[in-house]
Image (tube, rainbow, N blue to C red; front, top):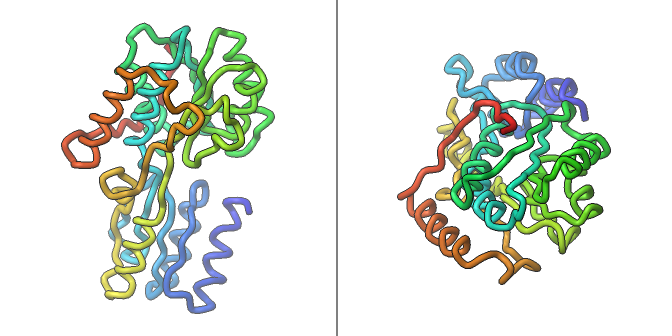
Length: 263
């Protein structure tokens, strides 16, 4: 479904009397907010790069704030790269992508400072062939580790026998000797908070992005699986210490929404 279809579907669901409508409105923000304004008694929880709009009390937003997990995955990547040359392929340089890439890069630098990043954005959200070709170019330019923000990148890594770090979902089962680990997004805490607010009659404009943080259970680092025992012990020790501190609220990963650049 194209983003431009979301407002139409939102309106259809509102007309059918649903209490809570959940989706995302990247690229159709203005139209979606117009729909929400027409149905003030309906609760809309929408993925958006924009924070709360006080004028729309029924339109809180969420976003992909899994920078905690991507930071940890960067520590792994920094320990596993041999050349110190890492390729990063994203869709669009919007906040939800930028913050993950920046947190990953910061994690890599915890393990080694002599690192080079190749950063590229392919434009569309879903174009595996384009992402794959972009990744191939990075490998030809020396990358031995890829950050797979988009589908297609891990395919290139697998074909050229380099490593990759996944994003949002765990894809190691599909690439058992390629994907070392992945930063996982758990949407359940976000949805549960919204449902509870609706049931309590307390649903209002808010930024639900906080529920994606690791200390809220909204993100995690995927098990190393086939790479268990293959990540250097100094990285594993830092990983365990850092994850414990994050979960305890004793360490905060910077939320940096600026566009990452190649180095």
